[in-house]
Amino acid sequence: MKVFARLLIAIAMFSAAFHAQHHHSDPEGPGAEKSEKTNLVDEFGSLGHCDLTSRFDNFFSELSQRPDSVGYVLVYQSVEALPADYDAAPMERMFRNHMAFRNFDSSRVIVVNAGFRSDLSTQLWIVPPGGEIPEASDTVTAPVIPADRTFLYDRSHVESDETEDGYSEFELLSVKEKRAQEMAAAAAEVEAETGSEDAPTVDEQPEIEAGAGEMDGEYVDTRTPEEIEADKFSWVSDKFGKELKSRKDSTGVLILYADDETLDIARLTDFIEQGKKRLSKSAGITPDRLTVRFGGYHDYPIIDYWIVPLGGKEPVPTPAERPVPEPEEATEN
Image (cartoon, rainbow, N blue to C red; front, side, top):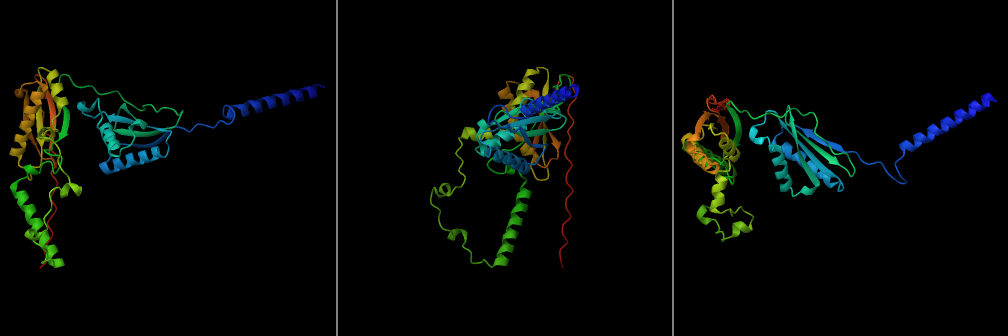
């Protein structure tokens, strides 16, 4: 009898364990299904423009295939980021601009300033209905803006007009003449190879009716003179002006870097001086608190914005290394 009783107890315990396990693994409620998990679809650091926009487009494509899901973009800044970007990461601006360019529904994407990491990083998440919201991870302590030493606050790319080559107006005459000669030689070579000597001259070209360019989709600048002037100086860092104003005993140094073998540095420096005057006026500071200096070579014009506290050291320019010119091809005899 004792053996039989023990056997009944063992069977009962096994049955209870089986039902408990079965109940735990089943979805709650009749007909319920397991929820889809939050998915990290991409993570990357610093990328070139084409690779970056391609990843954004892939993200938009996956979101389009999941109409009930929401996208999360977690942007981590590098501890090497400049102070001007602490409150607004450039990557966040680039993502929002590309989202607007693609006309993607911005209500389906949440962009999060996730703090700082040792290196620049961006995460692209897709969160299904009921999915777990992604949180910042592997962050480090945010850098602090220096209070009593010279430091680089901001940097901007100098262009005078966004509708074409932004600094072509500052090219040296010798550079323009050399390019014109190369274009003429290339045209002559094409004409010799194709035998297009009977091509119509400029005077024989058919007349273009007024407004035809706009109808054909050619670019028409609709900006007002005020907007054109504002765009001309869009490189000026207003954040730098506000920061300098808040530091009453500090001065600002604008260091210009550019290729002095292709650009007229004197004319370009004068253009920067004009931007300095606009900066001092908009920030409400006297022009004598700002100095413009040429710092040496860079493959395209940039401005470094330095803040120098009272008694602080002057910033030392750090020009880029000029590329070694390629040897000219030997001419055939």
